[in-house]
Length: 542
Image 1 (cartoon, rainbow, N blue to C red):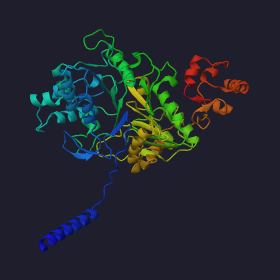
Image 2 (image 1 turned 90 degrees about the vertical axis):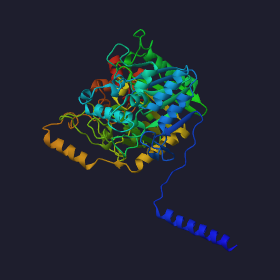
Image 3 (image 1 turned 120 degrees about the horizontal axis):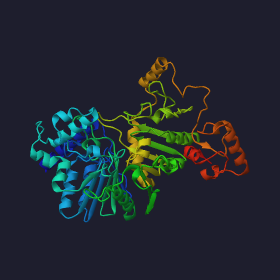
Image 4 (image 1 turned 30 degrees about the horizontal axis):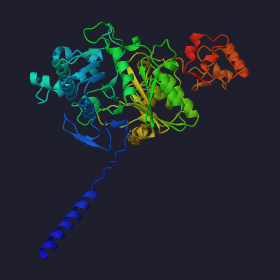
């Protein structure tokens, strides 16, 4: 009896001591995983709700293993796998594709031409001549292939760890965006996988260590901040397959009928309903000769226009002026706008984040054409604090906590008019909750406002430039967001491109007879033609 109580006392004392030790340590908050939509599942490689052990650096860290999710999707394939991704370097994904290929599954892979080469096959002297960014990419991939980290690549290491060599050795068909007979489209920037014509994986991440797990050359990095969406829908998969087939054409060795970039046939957004969730898809690019409202950025603008309360943005690049103008209109209507931009792009002269902050940087004493810093700037714009070596690689926005904009498409003119891209708009409060949590994670410790260093750069430019053209002309009309044709003053109408005093008067006269209800109505005003309509598309509302 005494021995039994003695043991219980020792156990109680140990438990008490452990409890005291635990409470003296800082508590790490791990929020519980959010429920997933039955058709649309969302994952983040920095999710605070989960942990995993990286397969290449053996680091246990928070986040969803995006590579494993892709591998598991591929492993389920029974008939077909189509992969379109800018860069593929992860050997586990390559091995999964080879396994299904050898099992009789039809596998097709499309890459961006810049990355349709094996770094391990390039002589060292040629690697040394690469631009710094590409040289760093090459060095990172070579570290991945060098599994014993001895600085030498053996044939065994190359055959087991070089993703492109793994695919080539197995005879997996691969082509890139030079297959249309050109030197390549702007960028084949897609990042999607279609499995058996019903399961689609869409991500902002390239299939690389840097984008998913972290850099070998930056031990503290945990991968560029990225998201992944997995959707099961035959109808949605059909849209992706149509996009893939246009780029694939007859495939390697076939007729040169592949189509990339603006050579692809233009298509309006496609929409599918999955239970309580609606998914709308738009592929880029759109020719600049087409109405801007029909482009992917025009599609994003239409989604932003629906905002009544909040818009939260996490963007790698934000350089599309018209989207900044729309955000200004939303802000003026009382919508709370918050934006995080990657530190490497947030304070460049073409960044629209500067517009939202009400400041401007010049490039060789010239502002961007049409640059419009907000007269009433907001302070809820900035950059996230990231692990050393990592980037904010997201391209997402959340509207009113219920609508998500995501995909591979950066908010830029190049993505809109040159690159092969995917934009998804997902209407679902359940899906949006996942993106809102990721935004709040990034926003919590973000650096907001105009940094002192940027303020100093602006002052230096003002002092060193004899004149900075365009933005500092006090006599120039100012443009404040989107112009409402039915309520704008004559002065506001005259800020529009191609609209002078006489045409502004005619617009006012026309609306007094009958309010404008569409852009087509404006075409009835004398002096407005097709060219001017295209200029005004996306700049006016009614």
